[in-house]
Length: 139
Image 1 (tube, rainbow, N blue to C red):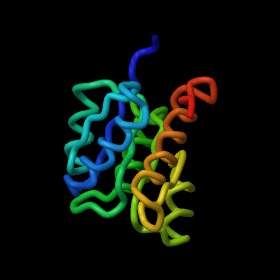
Image 2 (tube, helix red, strand yellow; image 1 turned 120 degrees about the vertical axis):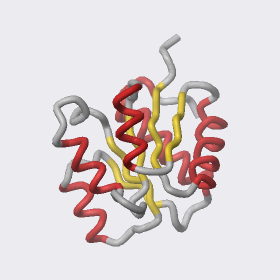
Image 3 (cartoon, one colour; image 1 turned 90 degrees about the horizontal axis):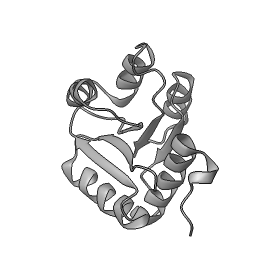
Image 4 (tube, rainbow, N blue to C red; image 1 turned 30 degrees about the vertical axis):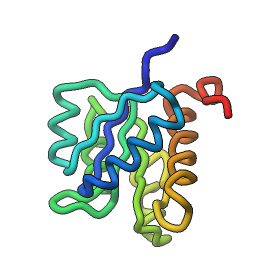
């Protein structure tokens, strides 16, 4: 059995971190190990002390936003390889374009669909980016 996928989830709203963790955990039944932090600064500290397979970040956060965090990671030899998903409620076309141009692997919008549907889309993207199609959960 493969090791769980280690996910670093960055969102300044603790409630969003918890809801996402609950839905992801429910859908994959132990295949994900999710660490949630509430700032980009905390995310960078966590990356220094632990190993992750993927980073999921909100866009709007105080201090450093999700795109700024993405830029820091992509400029780093140590973290440039990490898949990055911007998971945010700010779904403006210019934000999506900027995010993808700066190296994000996916942009998933929180608004509109149910939390369950959004998290299912997130699960599918995580499986694809970290393990490829063969790692995808049955369902």
